[in-house]
Length: 252
Image (cartoon, rainbow, N blue to C red; front, side, top):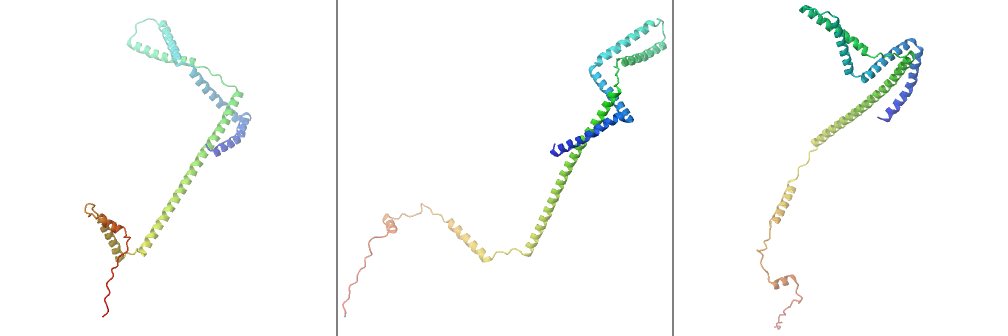
């Protein structure tokens, strides 16, 4: 429960208490309202007492008591009747009469088994009726506040969902417009095709690289070089080169 609902319900209940007190005062002063309160309170009192007594009493005990009274009444009637030979029609009539007597005896026994509820006094009935009406009013106000708050929360959530839906629709429309503009720009300015020389240049580089990659040196096919040749090729000679002098020819 939100804080707003708690504060609102407390405020409304505080305002409803003076109204409940006014209802109690009118129950004592207004004659018609007094009669309504008394009648209503007496009905509530009877219902309450019957429910309490129904919970306390055992229905099986009441049924056994009614059955005993019916059997006792039948035995007394048969004892009072003179023993004569009866025809079939008279026997059927006596059985029907016996059933009616049983129902009448059962109803009387049920009425006797029902407890007599003593009505409330007028003052107590007025107080009870006025209190019930006042509490009912406060309860109805509280229920109304809860229902109103729930309705307000649902309406707020619905409005929020509607706003989000509108925002999504607006974003989708903008996205469609941007896509349409992009397609229009592409149609006006197509992308240039790559030049043939540059393409061949790149293709040639690719073939040369592939050829270089395809060259594999077999270590078994390499020829052995003498150690002296390797040293001569790797290490430079420390001796200076010898220059041969040619003999001079005499002048003629």
